[in-house]
Length: 392
Image (cartoon, rainbow, N blue to C red; front, side):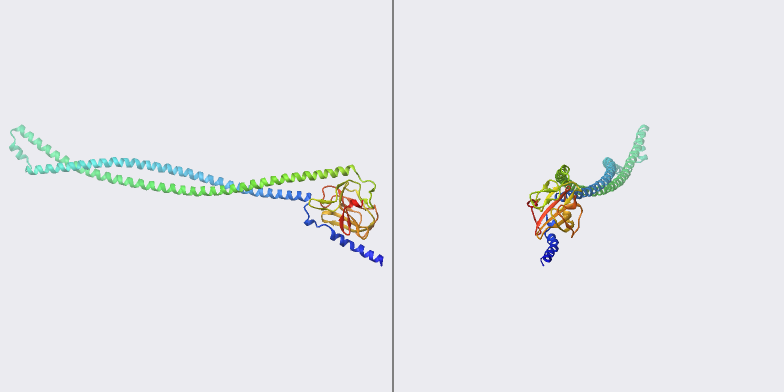
């Protein structure tokens, strides 16, 4: 009955040990995990920088195209403005000419009024004089010379009346014609100027829309550039943190490598306790709190491939992959005490096998979460980890 009870207790040990293993998903990330997290964060920010840079480049191209269109419209606007200025100058010249012609027209009308007044006065005088004719002039003349004078006088009177009438007619016709021509020219120039002004305003409106769009693009580009600068600064900060973590990792790896090279695998190492050391090598990380959580064993440095020996005889309860431990072996020595060995590169035993003290059960490696070849060695009582140094 005692042997049966012991067998049942041994069979129940794997379940107890598995239940006692630490839960890595809730533990503080290891240095390796923190480095990988930083690297992933850097890659994410680099990808975001790439997207932002592409977006900024796209907006810069749009702005350049719009700037070209704005420049073309500006040139068109200048040409139209030049034409408008030319038309306005021509209109100003015509208006000056118009003012001169109107002044001339006013003078003509004044002369016309005077001529009409003179003509009226002359007709009135002729009427009152009963319009002297040639017979009256001959009869009243005092000789041939006087007759000639009177005949010449009559001729001058006739010629003067004719000139007055002709002047009145010409002045009236000229005034009417000038006024009509100038009114036509002024109307045409005003229409041309209005059309050119409308074209200029239309071009100015389109140009204004393009300028607004360009300014909008420039505003978006500015925000993207600000975001890019922020992401880039964040990446540089993370890269600085990564550099510090990588230096720490290199320091640990160098320390492990130096310790492994200085102390190659040798004979079985005995301490003052009942268990032997699984490998010959320095303890590079003791039992206790590390990085905010319990380090459940001691790390013993040794070169990759160094044979790992059982600390005592017993039955293999676990031999397989366990999360951060990598290749992990646990040996049950009695009803309460067991030892475990992590980060092995390969196994030399299997679950259920009986091993003796000092027997090779695996080989040193760096599987799971580690920074160099070593053995993570644990002692567990009732499945709970205790300091191995009390047993070695």
